[in-house]
Image (tube, rainbow, N blue to C red; front, top):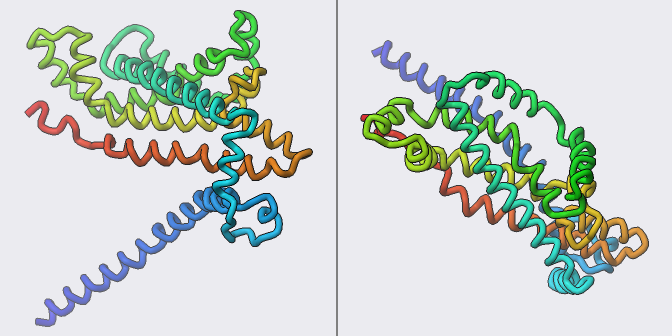
Length: 292
């Protein structure tokens, strides 16, 4: 009886200790979430304020000018905001799709094939991850200027396609998600390498490809330095550079600050919608039972 009582007390003590230990990481995650989301919340509040309310009301108090700000932003310079948004969608969507395709095929080849120089290529990719994008921006501009592609959509799209970190992620995911025995079974059944990749490997890599696509889409959507260096025609600007030009003009026209804040808020909405709609593609154990 005494032993049972002692065991029960010990279990309760461990349960209480586990709850106490779990509070700390939960609190840290909550603090991190507040730190990341507070700027978004502030932009939302600022976007609701009219020009008169922006500098005269409390920081965290909502205003009454959201719809007026949106209407003025859409009408500014005959709707140039829509052109910037379309350019951004082209750069982010096209660049992310192409980068995902190249990364998935490259990662699969590096993970599942043995060929001379494979390790050297992979080590070179790891080294490429360590090179900051800002270091490459000016050499890329000089290269594109030499071949006549500077100040064009291609000057922003092409550098985004080959992304070392995405290839690294695809390689790691392919090695873990695609069993070698499954590929061998397909070869025994007479499937060619292209069929194995397109019908067996790529469906298993969908969660990894979605992750790569999201990372690349967000990175290109938020990219400022590359289009700022490459482009001179504001008709080709993405939202980041376009809003920056509004900010520069706002030094002489304070009324533009409301348009800048409203544009910044609207530029966040597609990213939130993208994450919410694509979360269902994050699945695990897609190959469970495939080789049983």
